[in-house]
Length: 180
Image 1 (tube, rainbow, N blue to C red):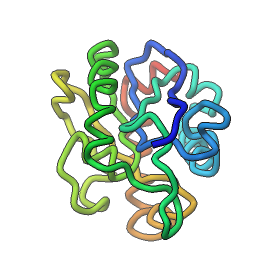
Image 2 (cartoon, helix red, strand yellow):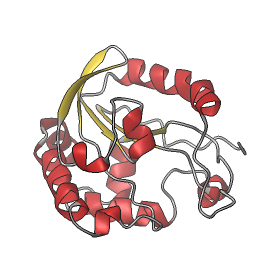
Image 3 (tube, rainbow, N blue to C red):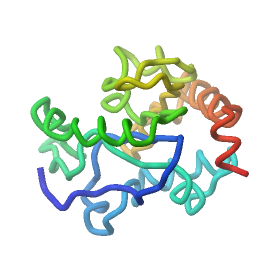
């Protein structure tokens, strides 16, 4: 993996967003979701009441892996391997212990799989799960990855399931407090 470490601002929040790993552009600007996927992600959150600036000020942003995993020879970014995920796991576990989040939003299959079994996105996106997240019971609302390379969230059933997931987040009391 390639440094530097990329992470969100140290926001004291009861909402935790978990991504996969920073992309190449994120290591340049030193903030998560700062490029194409971020533009899409923040459009989603803007529709339910938090624009990008407000989101970054009110939601703690973490990732499964904290450094850029490198390019995939077949295109796109390489998915972190098991050892890389294990090396970064103590950071996420510690952040969860400090935050004790009430709402966890894992973005993409890799982030979702750190919290629950997932075979297909259609089986988890659009639902709320009450889970033990590293010792803390939290509501978990998975989202698809907003990557420009993914079409899942732009076609059915992804569009409808994404809309359902965003509605669940919007109605969540912790989200409502963040919007206030």
